[in-house]
Structures are given as C-alpha cells and as structure tokens.
Length: 146
Image 1 (cartoon, rainbow, N blue to C red):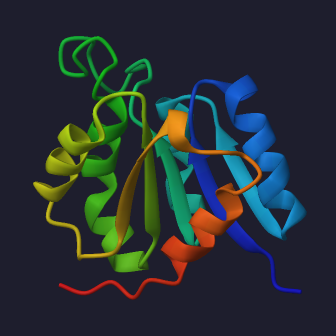
Image 2 (cartoon, helix red, strand yellow):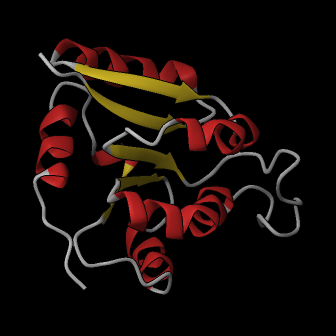
C-alpha cells in the first residue's frame, strides 16, 4: 500500500490527536507540526504530501509578529499565503480549520486566488474525528481548476 502523507499544522495537540489516529487508521501518514516555525522550516521537506490541514488561530512564533497575526487570529492564513505558490505548484490540497466565522475565512482564502477546489474551509466545531478521513478523501478527490 502506498501511504499518502498529510501535513497538519496546529498548536492544539490534544484536540488533533484523535483526528490523526483516525487518519492513520485508514492509511495516512500525518506529519504534525505543533507550531508555524517548525512547519515553515520543514515544509520543503514534505514535497510528497498530498494535503495540508491548517489551523487558523495559532501563535505567530518567530515568523510573524503578534500585530501581523492579530494576536494569533490570522496566523494560519498568513502561513497559507506564504506557502501559496508552492502549494499550487505541488497540487497540494488544503483543509483549513477555524473556530472563527467560516464565511470570513473563506473570503480571506478566496483573496489568495487559489485554484477552485484546492482549499476547503471548515469550522472545527462541526468536524468529527471519526468522519474526518471522509472529508479529507472528498477534498483530495477534487480536481483543482482555475
């Protein structure tokens, strides 16, 4: 079996772990990065990853100031913007998770001009660890279009 690799950037390991366990149970290898600094330093070593799961609200680390992240409320979006061209070139799908308003985050993601179908946004409160692999499979099955 060829294992599909996912990158997960989230500072809440206890919240993430059940999701990671279910993803591993259906054959994914998940590289969990607990902060954006580590994720940014190691992202280019993950060229074979088929997807990225990215939390929006995280500390800015050394990469972004508190002011720029709006005290952590936009950190994931800033990282998404930083990686945008590489994500598109690699064809990596992105699943953005947020505790903020989904429509607000979708508008910010849309402004980054990703190809249609490459990025999905979901509220953390509406996801379920057991069914999360199905959401990921649906996202990965989409063919991006301009």
